[in-house]
Image (tube, rainbow, N blue to C red; front, side):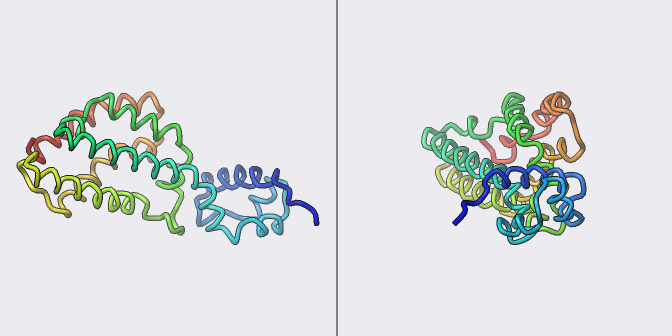
Length: 203
C-alpha cells in the first residue's frame, strides 16, 4: 500500500487561505483552490469532506491560539483574585492593549477570515460567539469578586455582554478596516482612554 503524500496538505491549505481571503467562504471555489495548489479535487476530498471542513482546517491554528490564551488569561485572573489584585485583572493600560494588537496581528489572516470572510460558514457569527463565551467566564469571575467584597457594583449578564461587545469590537475593528499594525498600535491610546472598568465594577 502506498503512503499518502503529506506534501499536498500544506499546498491545499495555503491555496485555500488565499481563496477564502480573496472571495470569502461563500464564494470560494474548491476547484480553483485545487488548481492553484496543483492537486486534483479527488486529492482534496481524500483529506477534507468539503469546503466547511477545509475552512475549519485553515482556521485551526488561530482558534487554537485563542483558546490557549483565553485559558491562560483566566488562570492569571483568578490568581490575581486570590491576592485581591483587581487593578491587575482590569489593567486597561496602553501597553496591555498593544499586547492584544500584537496577538491579533501575528495571526492577521486568521482573524481576517473570521471577522470578514466567514459568512455562510459555522463561524459567521464569530464576534457574537466569542463575546458570548467571554461573557460567560467574565460573569462568573465578577460574581466571585463581588461575593468577596472586592467590587461594589453588581453587573448583570446583559450589561456585561454589551460592554464586552463594545470592547472587543474596538480591537477587532482594526483588522476589519485594514489598519496597518502601526496605526492599530496607535489606536491603543484611544481604547485606554475610553474604557473604565474600575468605574463600571466599583473597585
